[in-house]
Picture: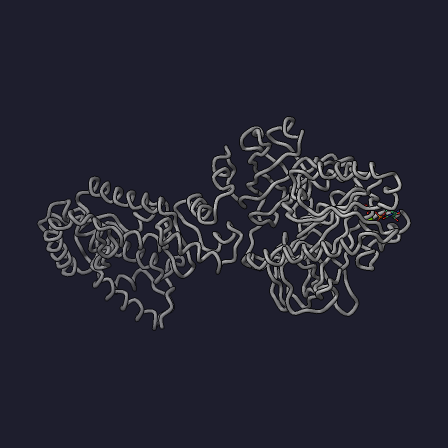
Length: 630
Ligand SMILES: Nc1nc2c(ncn2[C@@H]2O[C@H](COP(=O)(O)OP(=O)(O)OP(=O)(O)O)[C@@H](O)[C@H]2O)c(=O)[nH]1
Ligand SMILES: [Mg+2]
């Protein structure tokens, strides 16, 4: 478990951590000189049962709220410190708001410096306590233990340790219930250690990290490997969610404070987030439709544009928005963030929220976000699949949308396949499409085939490729599955047709094809002009063209210039051509004429046909062999 401090400047956070753990986390010379925490400090607390709690001590000064927010994102619980002699101060309020916005669920309130406050009288103490109770009402600290402590007189420290042990018990039972999430480790320090190389540290917000794991460093996406791991100063093989870790990285290029370690193929970098936001009391009225704010996400702060989707906040002071970053960021669905004003001098917390979706399109209204917000994984998977449209989405993409690992998302997919909300059309790279889109595609497919028959009564049907293109360039696998499901359609070779349509055509067409093929085989390399063919074979023009098209699809005839040649005759010529190149490096017009033994009107289209088929290559007046002959 990770326990973080929070509270106003000088209220005794660092002193309390020192008293509990024996570690003075104010280690910088400047911190010692000013008696002020500047950089977050880290310590650990050994409990009576041997378990170890990581403790993160944050600065309280208003100048460092940004740094407090960067740490608070990874905490499991907070040790909320209020000096009894001063009571509630501005950063007491701001820190509680931040913890609340970051979705924190557990904590302890420590009323410190009671050695100073108690002499002020019982009445005073009662007043402070009731103030604090009123202040935490309606927040996650409402029912939290409230303990009176002093590091001077060493009062209340044992009770505080007991309360922490109790928190740990609660948090481990709830952590066991949750499934492993994709790795998310935002970095708060990067330094080099002699003999080890680069070491990065952070709070392992989600997932498990092992020695030798391949990882990606966002936002650059550089790949690196985990060379070594430490938890609480001890080398370990594996670190689990909810621990402070130090990671020794190989190839650490790109690692810097604010970066995130992720597992390759289990993340997406995006400039646009769909979010739900809450404004702090009094902040929502003046909130314009679009504003630039500081977004504290993980251990990084970004200046970004926040656009409300509904135009204003509702009565509950919540709204849906899209955040547009200047460069891609690493985030996950369900992640909490804080929004602060972008006035560099005296920046203050305005609100915060939770990430609903990554990388969606620019939206006009909050309809989709409203549906997505607070819905179950099953419902969200359907919404995401519907938003993915006709091309469907992979299980990996769905896993990202639900912030699950691919193995876990499979169970969700199976349920939705069984309830016919999704259709699986690709098993190799597992891909699904929303059932509503599948039904729509099915209707479209039938319509396009019917329309084709109406327009081209002379043809047997629409080519498969043309049909696939008409369906929005549907992925091949989806197209074939869809086609197989159509009881009213049948496919023959490269053509799709209506079943009913085929019966009366097929008889005539087959004999027309035979007649034409016979005629072209007999004509060899000097066939009649294409226009004259149907007539020469005693066929109507429509039937003749349909038969030629069918023969073309079956690759029995081929078109070159104004002529249809029988494929058989052209193959004979090709053999002669290849034989010619066995003895000669080039082929000139005279030599080609000897091979074809026909007039120029046939020679030219044939020569161009071989060029097009990449058998030959024209170089000036001669041709060379292009095709590799085995
Ligand atoms: N009398 C008394 N003084 C205390 C107690 N706890 C802390 N102090 C004093 O209060 C001052 C501030 O304590 P810190 O622990 O540095 O306060 P902090 O909350 O960590 O301050 P920042 O990190 O800068 O926000 C120091 O001079 C401490 O010695 C206490 O229980 N009793
Ligand atoms: Mg401090």
